[in-house]
Length: 177
Image (cartoon, rainbow, N blue to C red; front, side, top):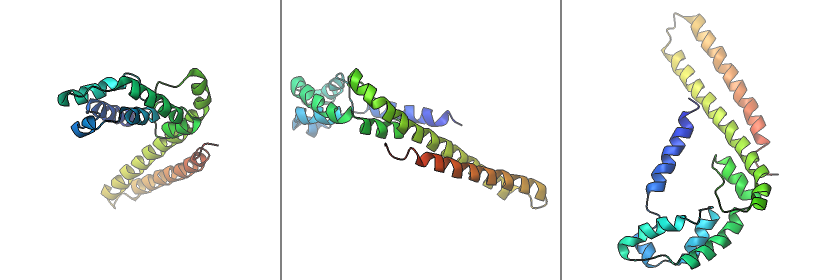
């Protein structure tokens, strides 16, 4: 069960990665500095412009690499911050390339703080799934088997208590200090 969520995330990422980055209309009206800025705020690599080039090739548009790189550098100033690292970690994402070693050093504690929140969220989700399974089992267990139903209800109660404790622990990581 714990491997399902990372696999789904990888599949979603690969599906998005295969999509075109810009529409034909966006290519024709492109402000490459603005596109670079937006890509920088998301931590896109310098090679990401190649995806834009492929997306715009059909309409005969070649990206202005210098303008895009200037915009990307400006966007990276917003991306390479502890606050952004916390948000990325809290979503279960990964810090992308583009930040300097010094920026990454400042970002790491915030990223780890966010990842703690995310890991607890995954654990809570797994427990909620277990509770749904138990509820289904209780509903389908014969009323002539009260011992089994009581055992399941006790297990469900323990899981609910565990969720409560995890939610309390998770509050610690709800914001970056």
